[in-house]
Amino acid sequence: LDTAEFVIPPKETNAFFVMTSQIRTELQTQTHCPENPNIAQALCMNDSQCESLKSKIVLERNGVYTGKCIQSDKVSIRSSCEIFGWCPVENDSSDKIITYDNASFLSVFIKNNIEFPKFNVFRRNIMDWYSDVMAIENCRWNPKDPIDKYCPMFVLNDIFNAAKVNYTKMLRKGGIMQINIDWNCNLDFDEGRCLPEYSFRRLDKGDYIVSGGFNFRYSDHFMMEESDGKYRLYRNMYKVYGIHFIVQVRGQAGKFHIVYLMRNIGSGIGLLGISKVICDFITFHLVKHRKFYKKMKIVVVSEQELYKELLNEDEEEEEKEKGDTKDEITPSTQEDVDNR
Image (tube, rainbow, N blue to C red):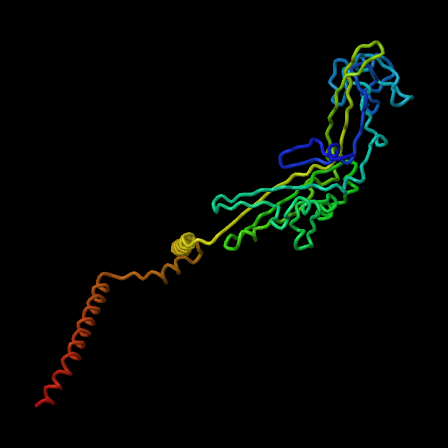
């Protein structure tokens, strides 16, 4: 098998799927056949049991019930109700599952471009030291190597090991993996130091009893010539299990700017002023001993005391002014005495 058969569908938006196992039901055509005996409601002993199903909705059915009870083509000792639909019906028993053990050795090339429009910076995860296509094809992502930890070529087994996931348990039922590409850039330095970081994790727990893993169905339709010379529509139906990889890109960049620095300083000073008002409100209104705090911080002054205090301040200022005048006159008087 090659990439065209492992990767289904070939293109997705920020995601890709790798098949690890499948169940094939080949040469289906629209006709009459027995229902799958694994469906409990389809088991029968006579036609009357199947007649009752004609008016009921059975969610797991593979076609329309005709009301007949016929021999099953899956289990010889059982009978099941006849249906009209795509026949033969799918048999999803464990012995019919085809598993691809070597899928973990496939490699995937991830190309990512990111832009920080505020700083007019464009970056991509293909570094400048990869001078040609061969250099990229020969590298493999290695988190312990200072160069190859930026390689955009990943072996799936390395992704599973980095996420600490047991790949063998995902082979049969599949799962969902996330690939994170983080750009944390300090643009005060050279743009060449703005480099991606890769991390991986499994999104589904993988131990669900009902509908665990990841799978879907698709089919190929074609016309085939019958023995009577007429052409009839056939299909091959595939139930595929595999790993759905979701790629998430996150980025942030910053650069020093004096305007933003002054703005933050001003905001800090403003918050300090607001904090004083908030503290006073809490102290005066919400604290248990608020009356005591209010008494110690606020002094109530009468009008007479205020007048006396202001008068004393005026007298002190007048005496101070007189003292300054004496200091200015004394040197000149002494000089006149000396001259005489």
